[in-house]
Image 1 (cartoon, rainbow, N blue to C red):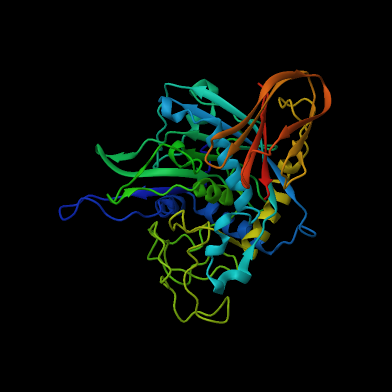
Image 2: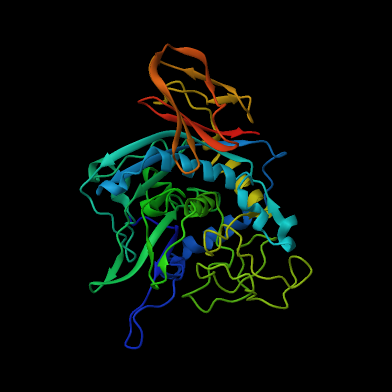
Length: 444
């Protein structure tokens, strides 16, 4: 039986013709939407119905913190693809900042949208980093049903998912350029599957198999301190990378659509296409990886704010430059939290005692903010050697505590932060089974 498939992905693309060799970048989700409509019309209709249900259903009471455990699979071929721990920790910090409205660039949001910015109160714990060296090259088959499946299976040169009902699996690898007749036509930066087996969806309509559910990211756009560059195909230089591609793709994983309503190859982008969220203004097309604050593609439409407003280029679900993105809306927050407490509620379950994690439930820091002695608290479910490092936001090592072996049970360890300048740091507690990270704020 043919598996049904739905996903979102980011695609940088350029075309070649007799007049010009390079066209501007655009989002490849339009290409896949055309395939979806043509090959899987029933699935597309089911997705629309399910999205509407998630949008309207208020599953959460209050705004309690929701915690999600992440496993990062680094599947590498070339040496530069084997990303350093500091890059992975930096990306986890970015996810935590952006999903909790703690990102420093919130001040860049235009005043007209201040009241619409929401705090998802979703927190991400790095459960483990799995590293797999491979000889496999990971290519996307846009005309079939295989989208980097090899990266997700040990037997194919990738890394098996941890239980996708309990963990958000993120695979980081080199995604090969898309070619047609030997000509490079685009570059996918990442993609994500929506929840599988949502109510009103056909069975197995998310990931082709449960073990393929999650997010895939090209290694060059993971972390803001990533030394690997990726060029904009229009020849304008390197793409600005701020760690927002994973933020965007995790948004899809939690059920969000692009704010312009995913128009494109099925017909012209139009102002009557919506993402289904009430407080994102209409746009007739995605941004072109720029920061055009004058962009207002749907004039005279006053549905959302009782006034004609510009396109919301600051939203994580657009395709503006990553340096411009800085917010989710309240409506997007509600939809993500509904999804996380509904079809993805398994992610919120405590980690069982049989887990491969040596640290449970999580690392705690006190005081935080701090200046001077900081106490780290954690539990071990088996005797392990522990290393502790403190990194700045550029991934530089600031403090390093000697590796020591600790017994099963509850532990407190103190570190001295007096020599650290005021700012934000990442505390990394590592065993050979896993990693826990927490943000540490050093005050004046």
